[in-house]
Length: 219
Image (tube, rainbow, N blue to C red; front, side, top):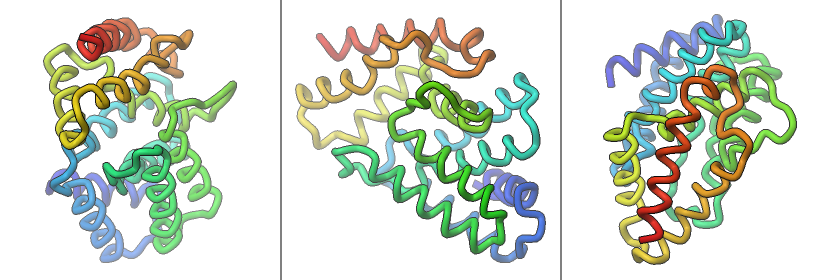
């Protein structure tokens, strides 16, 4: 947690150079308390760390500019900052996380255009569908949030168990049907990912993992 707290201060300082140091630290502690809530099986600090690492990888591979990198990184910090497993209709967590990002970044003194771009990137994670276009920052966050689909088999299988733990109260048959409805569309797309690096380095494994999990869910 201490490493993540330090990373938050570094990331936020790059995006908002004039932010008050104490306020930055307080925001970081609040964010990490949210990410560390006990009801989170998958959407916790490990997921946050993985998404941040994936953002770094994609920004290096794609030579993403400083501003777009700041948008993607801040989007990673806020994208699941609000996570209520009761959001059965979908989208509510992302809207509340985006509202938190908007409010918090404005308090830190971030440029309004930067805030708007972070909010857009966070909202994208509701359905992971950028349509026909998307800025580099949006594509990076989209792919980074889905990195786990391409994780090595042990991590991917652990991820599947973690998501199931989050929804332990849901009966098995209902969970399997709902989870398959979330995962299957990724296999029906021409590409799971948007960036060139992710399509080349991650997509084959992601498709194998998705197919295996869908087979398990159907059993």
